[in-house]
Length: 443
Image 1 (spheres, rainbow, N blue to C red):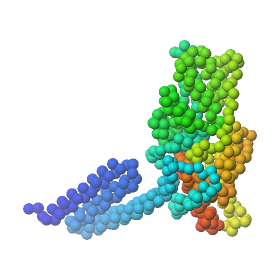
Image 2 (image 1 turned 120 degrees about the vertical axis):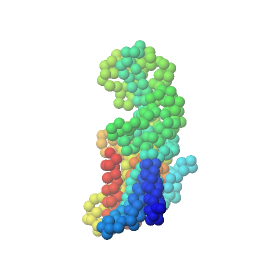
Image 3 (image 1 turned 90 degrees about the vertical axis):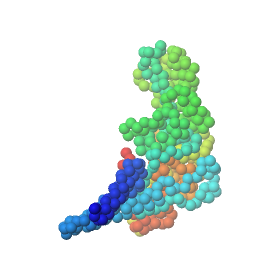
Image 4 (image 1 turned 180 degrees about the vertical axis):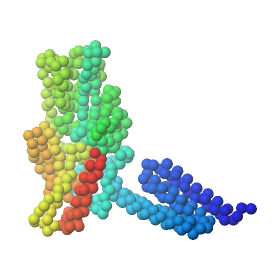
């Protein structure tokens, strides 16, 4: 007859095995969820601890029992520490993740051009934690506003025509059209959202440190890309590139690019598109270019910003939220903190940039090099009353959202005069340090 203690031991070992299997299955099926993975590991550790506990009951010698107690204490301590870390991580992640900022519905967005409207948005969503977690989801697909896509394209998009040798064609040349947005690989999630906005067409690819959204199908360009930019037109000098590109697309749609006349017409327009022609193309079509001058890049700059979401998209590409800390003899802590928001562009977009001051009702436009112009706002009251409330309503996306969150946290400290104390100044330094660290890790 089997002794009762062995029956009990067998039941306990079965329970331990069941817990251990639950832990393994939880770990395997929740590899994309860090919280559930850690919980599964804890279950496995606790099951091993329990096994040692029930086994030690049948160990007769003192050394064996002592060793069992030692293992139980160590495993229990590890489990307790692991659970404590898990709870702390979960609370911080859920409380300070980028999703904690209140996002307004884009279906009910109203103009905030007037100061009176901007003053209504007067509460900060930013919190200042003791430990900072900075992350932008690489998997979440967000519904983008059409004007955001146009604004971001004005900043980062490219309408490109490729011409290369191809002896299989009668003209000896092959013409291809592309719509492309290229970013640092850390913003691949934003490109995935843009691809989703366009119905999943094109390709998102990561090559080295860069990521690309590329649409090369002529049918998709005609049916998806062009209708968007006709309905929500670009407002920077990139509009000229788009119009030339669209004209070339029309030639390709009519199959005229397969003729010498059509090819020469494309070359003339391409000479004024983006960076112009390569040396190889210029040499090959020297006669065409000598008898037909380049297309003029004339355009009428927009007199105003079409929508707040355009500015959100443009800022996501070209904007900068910065925090400067520098020594000052006029402050008791010996340092001064200055916030600023700026957007830099080529001088050809100076007239468009000039509308930013009236749009935000603050800031200045200045040239800081021969070919660059900058919009800049550093007055704290303007940042606090106008700039920050605007971007709380029309959020930038990508890693620029993380910069804006950090910017808002520092602004909150400044509004509460915390920067005038050592503790507040250290909090600002910590925000800057974490931001710099996370940006370097994403490179």
